[in-house]
Every structure is written in C-alpha cells, then in structure tokens.
View 1 (spheres, helix red, strand yellow):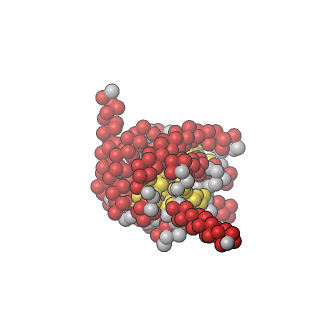
View 2 (cartoon, rainbow, N blue to C red; view 1 turned 135 degrees about the vertical axis):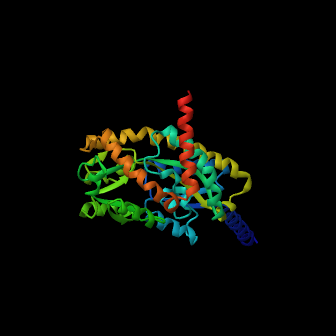
View 3 (cartoon, rainbow, N blue to C red; view 1 turned 90 degrees about the horizontal axis):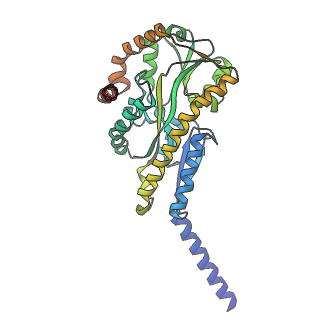
Length: 337
C-alpha cells in the first residue's frame, strides 16, 4: 500500500514537472555578434529581465557568434530551428529591402540626425516585416561604418585600388553591381569569411563600425581607417509571429517595454564605446586617415552620382525619398533654433 502511494505521488510529481516544462516559453534567438560582446550582453540582460517578469515562464536561449552569418541564421528561423534573430540591416534586407533606407551612403552626419530619421522610418518599416511574419522587438545601433584598409585611403580613387569586401547577405547583387559600376574592385563574401579573407589577402578593405572591427579582430590586418562616416549601421531584434504568439498575452507589453529600455542602454553604450574602440585600435597601431575638403567633395560626388541607381534598385524609391525628406526636415529644424 505504501509502495503504491509512493508510486502515485511520483507519477503526480512527474506530471507536474512535465506541465511546468510545457508552460515554459523558450525563445531561441541567434546573433552573429561575438560571445560577451556588448550586443550579446544586451540580450543576456533582456533574458534575465524577462525571466524575472514572468517568474521563469518566458526566457531566451541565445546563440552568439556560433551559427554562421545572418543569412544562415535567417534560414534557420524560416525552417523553425530558431525563433528569432538580432541582426543588422544586411540580414534584414533579405526580409524586406525597405530596411536599407537608413543605409544611404553619406546621407547623415550626426547621431542626432540619424536617430530623428530612424525613429520615424522604422514605424513605416515594421508593418512590412509584420506582413512577412516577423515581430520587431526593438531597433538598435551597431555604429558608424568606416573603411578599414591595408593601404591608406583618403579618396574614392584610393579605395578603387583595394580589394573591397561587400556583404553577400540578403539581396546584395544590386548593391555589389553598383559598387562595380562605380569602378570598385569588389569581393562578395559572408561576414564570417572576412577574417580568413584578410589573412590570405583575398580582400584588403572592408566596411565596418569600429566596434565590429575590434570585437572580431579584423583591424590588425587593415592598419588604416578612413575618417569618413559612410553610413550608420542599424539593426533589429526580431522573432517570428508564431514564436511571439506562444508568449502569454499578459506578459507581452511589459516584455516589449523591457526590450525597448535595453535598446536605449545599448544605444548609449555603442556611442560611448565607439571612440574607445578607435582609441584602443590606435594604441595597437591603427592609423586614422584624414579626409580633407577636396577628398570629401570627391566622395560626395561619387555617392550622389549613384543615388539614382540606389533609389528603386537597392532601396525602394518611396523609402529612399522619405529618408532624405526626414533628414532635410531635421536640418531645417536645427537651422531654425
């Protein structure tokens, strides 16, 4: 009799444990950001706060820098192996090209200008991603893209003499063709191939924010950085609509608020650490190549000549126009002050 009661109690306990396990919602999310980078740390804070909010009922399982490039990650999301991703514009563009609107070359000159435009553009982009079954949890920054090169690059002609890495993520063929039409020698690769390509000399130049160049240890192979803010690299944390539907409805709003708050913390950290990253690389031999007025005119001339090709082919025309309209609106407001 006692044995039977023990068996009954054990069965009941196992059922409770099984039900508790089934009640847990685990969101499997990946990023190309290296383990322990500031982007990985941000996701870990979100996971901790989600667990505290839901008493452990909802949590993140984070894969940092281990599952390939952003195309690889999104393929895993689409077949159900992952629930979401923290990805840059390069990956987002394979979901919808409108996400590239914030990556118009030399369109922005300050964080304030960029943020003013971004905060309005993303409100128009989010419904496009939702129509393709992706729920945006938060938007974020990766930093200002610069050219890192094996030889000093101050002008477009200097860069034309380099073997320039271009992203193979997403729908990149139009973008690569544009670089080539402007006379650049491009090598299309996955971001995870940058380091071996630098080591072998397959590429001698790449575009990246300083934090990425430092975190991935690319910069020792490219001892020069052009002092030119090419474009802001933005990103987003997204999950599939199906994964989000598994989250108990009472928690969703508070969870979104947590991700938003952490995106603000991350944004401040990226901006603060960008100069520190430059300083750290300079201390280890990096040389920053100045761009004088004549060189800047050459860059602007090359870029603006490409705008008719970018508009409509790389970035949908209406989003291209709206981004520049908002940029000009911000500048006008600053002039009025």
